[in-house]
Length: 405
Ligand SMILES: *Cc1c(COP(=O)(O)O)cnc(C)c1O
Image (cartoon, rainbow, N blue to C red; front, side, top):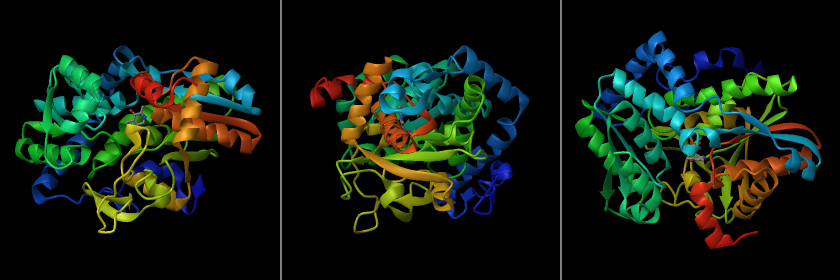
């Protein structure tokens, strides 16, 4: 398929280019020392990850450990309550650990093992990435250092407990506001010292090359499975595809399976409390081009051009930028990026729980909320939603803040 002069038949061969660019977005804007480490990972990725041995091992792990393929479920009652559009969900909530993040963490940790590294390093905010990586490290017998701000450590006690039970070392970061940004800085600094024995594992399609490409490729299993399953279930492709976008890994995973198909694709960002800067995290909708955390993308900036403070009811979506490939697909118009606010999200959270018996993560509820609106507009056809994770982690918070609806 040709779209805006981009040939999607050969898209994955051409994007990113050899320097990690998706058009003008992406790249690797890091210190010379880190650049060397990134080049080592890139080279290993292209030799090891394309080898038959690596691919077979990853396939076995996905089946025997993660429980893949995850199914697609038809949402009969929710669809019926809206009209004639058929809604379906790809069940990443049923992936081991309850979300899609393990798909790329198992790939990154397997790469670490093949490269002869002894340790994996990462930062975490809400703790979801930390738990997924700690799980992968336990599976492969790797050491695992997770950097986390002291404020987040207090807020996310259950995930801190999970990481510790899995054998990870949770490193408390007390600098500055002691949240995600400081944790990223501390983890990068540690990695600069330890890169001979360790590998940094980024939690989404973010950061310097090769991470946006590598994480996308590891997540593409979601799109490959979903396309095959959907055609088997219905005999055709969905008319529309919807996923929530924080950094953008679950979205790139499912989108990658359908970019070359006549399917309308929607990425959903959190509008939070509203469109005022600081009240949302809708970087692609309201942001401008800029460089942060080692890559060029579209980001939300404060008056000094620094990453702006962001807010979302979903802690997995409150990042002031998105992966460079999303910025590229946004400018091309191949994917439409739109928003839903906190209220619409909470409404969708309860509707999916009550009508289908699936309690979604608040992040994933953004995609469900958008699909419900889109279904009303479309009037007929089918929508496939990526249900990126389960909502067990969010239940206490939702009951405390919103009560039972
Ligand atoms: C972390 C997380 C997200 C957001 O990350 P992406 O990289 O944008 O996919 C979405 N859903 C769930 C369940 C998460 O844990």
